[in-house]
Length: 358
Image (cartoon, rainbow, N blue to C red; front, side, top):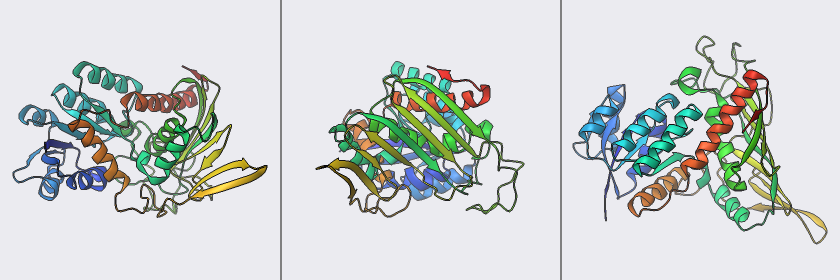
């Protein structure tokens, strides 16, 4: 069986929490090189996850020039997604880039252009598609069980869970706060279930109401108001070309009791669905209102569905199989591009006070 020679760019939290542990389980992958601007992080990753003799770099351009690689995973802050992914594809590598696709639409377009020019595969790390609930719901949507889906809500609401590490609070490095961080997951799964990527217009609201507060009750301890330059919540009203409507909700900090993260609500002509209490399908049957609760074995933890194989494991296995057997990855870059377009439009609409017309 062919073994893929793989390198990691960015050996921080998401690489250690998701990418490298899942890749390590695949006997078709050899992690041969690790790059991070903090050399110690790359050295620790190489020792824990790399093959014998795995190399360590601080500059990804140097790594791409020296190594013979098949695949690169880009696990950096958002402002490095595009340049690192483009450089890797131009060096002859297939690329898995963490979400969101890029900090801006222009950067995401450059990634698409590089992918088409090089012919290399490019996918984005939207692992929520691989939860048991979303796999079941997507099959139901594809089967037409919900009918025409004309209304949806993409929900990514945290009451007080502002990430205080890394560069999450840095608007310049990340491009935004909760909208681009967790709202992107909810929006991706919503568009995917609807199979609708034709956007007509976007109206957005962005709030920075709570970031200067102290004694915050935050899950990871109080944030530093001096370093918190991103929004604390953002909302969007998206109209699709066929008239369908999507409400986007995202927050790291908001005074709302019922927080829901990485979920969507779908309303179709035949039935509706949500994950507010596990996966529920609501419909009218034999003249009566019915709610069916699907047994997906959910563990009640974000990104984990209670099975031995996590969504991250399934994502990695599917991606590497696509590379080895020349298949199309589940998350297509053109789909992720539309997500980035909507996110940027929400920010732009909030800034200008105008509806953004596509």
